[in-house]
Length: 410
View 1 (cartoon, one colour):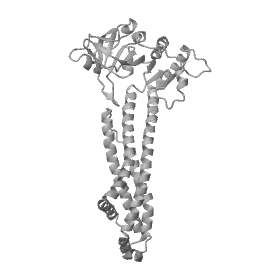
View 2 (cartoon, rainbow, N blue to C red):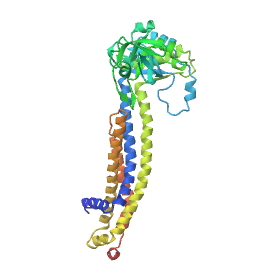
View 3 (spheres, rainbow, N blue to C red):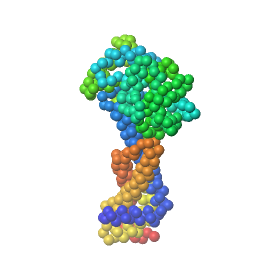
View 4 (cartoon, one colour):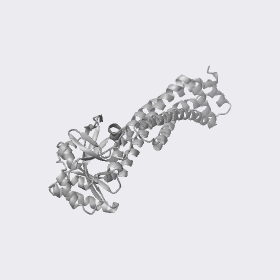
């Protein structure tokens, strides 16, 4: 048995029966395409989002009223009944959490229009109310001007930091530092421009404005926007776990949680948030794999049919091979190898198109392409198995042909 000859025979079959072979290869390619596209996009999203989470530091954790990521809605009612984390609670918490690198808090709202003179933005700007440690807590820097200072918080100053999208639209020809912007009926002086970051998953990271937290709560926050998120950053990984436990006890005391009651807040490390997000995107990958599996099963039936037709067309050839001494096992493996070759060929086409589509949509969402090596290897293994399983019956049928009857076949 010559493996190379069997592979060439399979490729020749594709060339001789273009329409029939193309339909079979297309069904395999679609299945693999679904697996690779889902795997590629999920890997790209994971790398981008988890990378952003990790930039905030492995020694940080967040405290919120509700979890950062919710899998399913069955606990939503329980979380929604929790009382907001208020500014007064945050101040008490911050004063007592002294053995850490920093404590920061913020809240946010969307849909604002920023104006200055004749220029204004679209009504899609996100406004943050934050304290002086906010930018360090989220690993962002100032490119021009200064950050919010403790004095800005203490004296409720009308100052603002703006992202580059605001600069482009409102101050196209002017240095924004020292200029004034209008947000609804309030006027703020721009004291800093936040360093440009670009977009992730199609969402700009620069279309935002940051004002002192007390100013936001006084003029812009509704009841639920008074619900604060708190970030705590420890000096090192070991002290983070001590601060983690201390924060739970301290916040339970501040929020008057009874000893027998569960926490009425969520406390999560960056690592745990990353794990939750990876679990969420894993569902997307599984969905793509399921869709691909159904398509590959249908493709396997097509492979079986095309191989049965091939056996019938080459009955006389099989008779000649047996007449000159070919063993049954040689005939069997010849057709199985041809079946595997067709499946692998369709799989390679699907992998190529899957990577192209992943790269296209990833680029549109501002993501770097992550090649899903595990999905590629799995797809090739599955294609091989489909070739073996669905090619086995036609191959067995070919190997069982009587050489005399086969030679008489017209």
